[in-house]
Length: 181
Image (cartoon, rainbow, N blue to C red):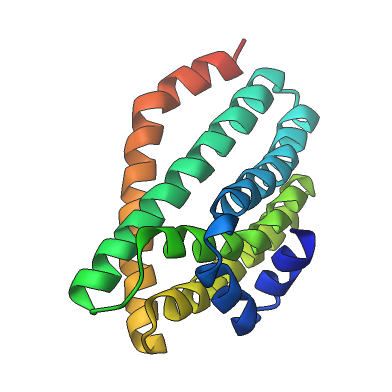
């Protein structure tokens, strides 16, 4: 699995084709998202710990993992709907779950978010890198050109961010309250 994650982060087109075709890798792709979100969440938790906010640390870690998984499933679903219906791509939802799951790999750089001054920048690089990997994953899974893949990813990402904002708005007050304990 680690070798596949590295190949995904290296934007290896063949890896995305392999993952798309292998139905047995769906659970593994979900596991990649969980592993990446835990590692990135640990970086955020360290930042909260160093800032003297242990309640925020725990809630941030748990909330971050939940948000990563929700974001993954929402993004994959929206990408599937947009890619198949709007741009006439050829994939099923499982193919997108697998390829997008591996495309999350560069988000592991979120671990470094605890580093003062530079941490947020390193995490941002990981996020942008994961978005680029997402374009390749979507392009390969849906079997269409890069322009359609970019548009599909951007539409999916915007919808995912709206859903994340709604969830954060609903649960945000509780997290802030717990963080202050």
